[in-house]
Amino acid sequence: MTGTDLSSAAARAALRGSPGARGAGEDEDAARDRFARGIWSALAEPGDGTGGALRDRWGAAEALAIAVLTDGREAEAAEAGVEPASLKKARERWHPRVEGVGETFAAARRAGAVLLTPADPQWPAGFDDLGPHAPVALWTLGAPERPLTPGSAVALVGARAATAYGEHVAMELAAELGATGTTIVSGAAYGVDGSAHRAALRVDGLTVALLAGGVDRPYPAGHSDLLDRIARTGVVASEVPCGSTPTKWRFLARNRLIAAAAQATVVVEAGWRSGSLNTAHHAASLGRPLGAVPGPITSAASAGCHRLLREADAQCITAADDVRELLGLPVTMSADDGGRTDDRTRVVDALGVRVARSAEEVARRAGLSAGDAAALLGLLELEGRASRGVDGWRRC
Image (cartoon, rainbow, N blue to C red):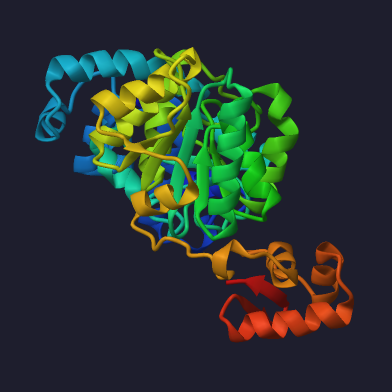
């Protein structure tokens, strides 16, 4: 175990060919840190506090050198607040995995996964609030340069066995928030999670899926196509390396990332003992604003939401504007007096926030002639509700 090669040459060799990897352009210390973090992701389970404490004190590469020893360097561990007994137990957890870490980077290359670390500008600043339980790195699918959670982000979570009501509310919230530039963060599960992701995609919004297993093993399998769509326009990420299977512990640990990646968490529908309450409690412990959607008082599927409203000081969420208030964003006011809808509304609905569209495409989507659509786009530009760029029109 003492023979693990942590040199910069080994780091560059391991990182070479990885999509989005910056090994060739990084200095030796940065390359070793990225390499070490990739190894740590395979060595320790998510949220391992002992590994986190060692990394916080000594950096990922030096902490890894301490970790792979059979004994010794207890003094350095003690400086990190790790007692000898805790170090011994941690090494007993980590050592059985040392021999298999060489496959970590090869599996990522096969899957096209990018290793994201705290040194990258795409790294969510909210992860820092997790302290020693912060993820050591993320393996991601999606454009390497895309920030994980740009601008405002909200976690929409809830029951897998969601009712039609829960799925409907999740879709309404995600669509309205996603269409106005808020990133939708969730876990890609059946029920509320999947509904939120799909609705965000439908309005060309940005959505992020945080998984409990490797990004090369879509879970649930029925959401393979959904995860592919998310990766094309958003990000699919996991703190465990490719090939890792989702386990009950990893699901619970993953929930802390969902809560930390977003500025607020909203539980759309949850039973009394729903796993989404775990995400809510992580959000509360991080000091994040927490919201819950009320349901019928006779519905067991909403009992967990009612529990949060009563016991966890969650805010009552009935519309997207409630979520915007939770995020500290200005509440959207209707530009049509008295709720009136007209041809301008159709043109606005045909525009995307992130994806630019030509005037001809807007006309087709709105069901208007090209001339009428062009005239209305000009008026909307004057009102500040649409903007024109070299690549087309967007909703403001």
